[in-house]
Image (cartoon, rainbow, N blue to C red):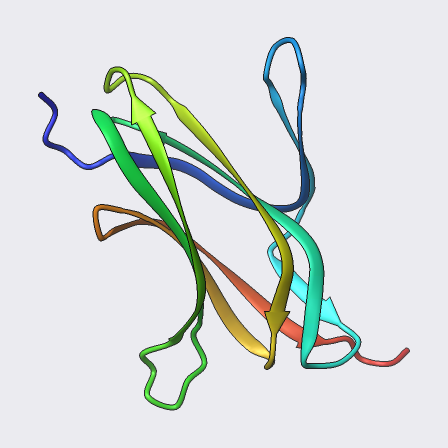
Length: 136
């Protein structure tokens, strides 16, 4: 049995994920690393997250969460989290997870960390800066 934690191969934020019906290949549409908005607070209507993991064994729970990093104490403030069960049939398998995220609220400018963890251990994070678009 493999006692090592799963390894994250990818964690990508995008506008949409399309899965091809026959091959199940994923197309990531509109990848991004920052979010510009007209004003705050704002509810971002739709986004998605794609993750790929390997080195797992059996059934585990993946947790995807968002943390606002720019807090006065520097500890961050958890905004939300989603848990998803995943199954590895062998440690060489690559498991893909797609998270559909609707109506995500951002209440302040600053740095947000989108984090993927399993078994309470952080596997990978994407840092996204949310800012107000400057007038032209």
